[in-house]
Image 1 (cartoon, one colour):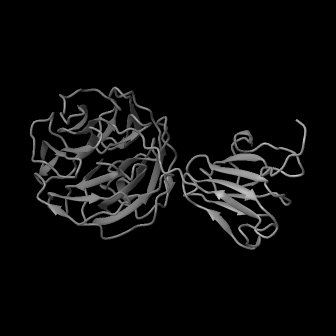
Image 2 (cartoon, rainbow, N blue to C red):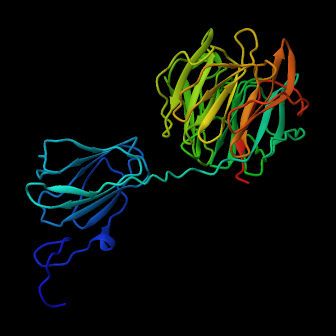
Image 3 (cartoon, rainbow, N blue to C red):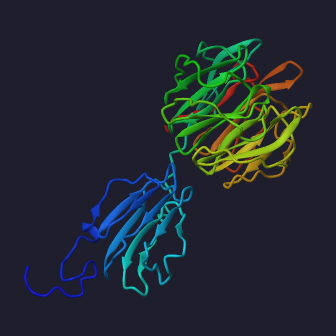
Length: 416
């Protein structure tokens, strides 16, 4: 190449340097600090921590740096730009520059000493990936006159199948959750008190027990979060602890002190990648709510979310929505509370099928839910089912869906 290079916006001093499609892309950054160089692109992964990005201390007109939110986590752990003595959009280095929107990318170009670094673009990828919805579900375990290992699959059209026996240790108070996108897990439980877990593949087959997954207990809540992981929380003796489940079904160690301890609560996924624990028994019936971020962090208690009660169930429906229903205050209830996409629980809606407690619920059909089984009164166990439409309307009772029982769990599985 010969002749004079003019108006080279990507470099200076007559030399053409890498830019746009020819940037030198660097390895993914996971550290809490990084110093970047001109003519380079960086994928900034803030899954585990925020990151401070130090720009070059000297720059010339046309120098360029590109930063990309690698894991769509800047909304949780923001990046901070340190302009390293140079101006940033005409402001001195004394100003704090944060970018805290998930899916954002920055194309920074240096102009001159007056303006300094300028984002020629700071776009957000608005197409947030959403995992496919599970189509089928299963109800498992519970008290059928004694601790049970029964399983009942529910099809993508909401039909509950006949009993299948012998799926791991018989127990009551086990909880189920979706994990890994299209699989499920049941864990913990009473009668006996246990810490075993059982993985469910995307064909609905329940695997053998895996033992010693955190403190043995039952009567807890569980839900999917983060797109492909799950969380168990609270439980017997009104404990305040959670256990995270990885996207390959490994249950983590106890994390304590996550809101007021309680048992006989429930949980559900909402907003596509977050979860919420609510209600339960703290020594008396409760209306507490604790939101869970898409990183599995449980927030402080929020009170007054509908009628205080325990022994209810919850499931997702629609797109990012959820529903809590039934339960007991000492008297069994027939009511529901819808949850919007930001985790706000709505006022009570009454008269939604036969009043009962100790039931379970799961999503099915991609955007609907089903409540089934439970205790109707005294020692009367139920085999009732109530389907929930994709607009959150609970249908009339359907009877005879497998062996009547209470204190069971449920979860969604399978993309097909």
